[in-house]
Image 1 (cartoon, rainbow, N blue to C red):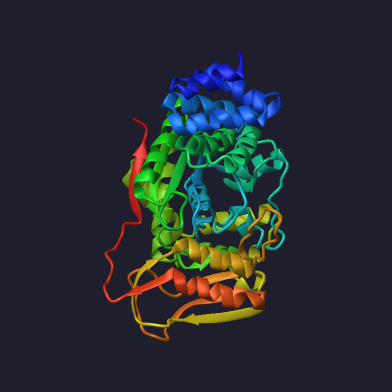
Image 2: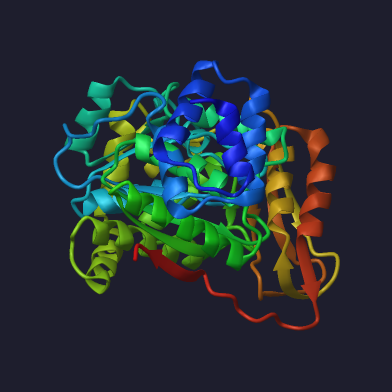
Length: 435
């Protein structure tokens, strides 16, 4: 088999088989296929596309390019949840304990944030002492005793994806739907869960800017799950404004705890209930209506909060954060931001809001940058609210006095006021499941 023949075949719009895709992935991971040939194939895929069977075969080859987690030591149906990324998205910290409280084991591996989107690991590390790196045996033990554990991805999980993503970034092939879907799903499949719930974001703070594109990505990923024998569903959800009111690591953990106490923002709470209900549904816990009732009850009766408390303690963190938010890192500079005009919040340029939080220290522009866990933004308004001139829009938290001016300017630009009240957009646009 020759790489040039595989490139030629895809260039002509023909379908690649499993063996050809495996040859490509294995060879590129091992370094026997050079960047220039891999780049040529990526561009051919970008221009000619792939059918669902091809995309699934590419994904499986990528998932099998390194370590694959074997979760068979954990009894029950293990359900994973993945978000395509947004601003203020702290749902993993809530839905994991909710699912565990309802008897569904959650053994989750998460990543760090880069750019305007936050990473779950960065949020968890704002809890003093919390350990995101655990031996496999300890990880399994926590899932079996607590029902929920959240750690960092292993260094050799889907290594083909790491190499191919870096190449896509410099060859103008990032926006290929099959390549996006295979990148996300290869890591999910390698993580070993029996079923997967996907939260595909659409809007100004998401990778997919339109609802139509988000649906297309959701359909691609659900099809991959079906081909791989994993029960998979996707929710297409609104990221045209930050989820909840907190943006930034410790601030988001506090909001997650408030949500687990039944005191969180309505949008974040409603989405967490819907995501957790889908996790319960895939685990066979009843009808969707019954699963929604169970998920909501885990917030109302305190059982999900208790699971989060137990998980923090089991992973070396200080569970006192549940009751005393002063235990979290505290920002030395706290500055309110006031409206310069009056009107309805007609829309929010969510990516600008996330960038403002990054400027304050809550995110990183490069992988090498250090996160300030205390930095971030607490929003006082949401889309549809009416504000008067001089009314509080948000509060900025940082340890970088020099960053305040730029961050405030970005935030002011992100909140667009109008004399006309906007139409309310749904939080969940729809659900995609396997045919």
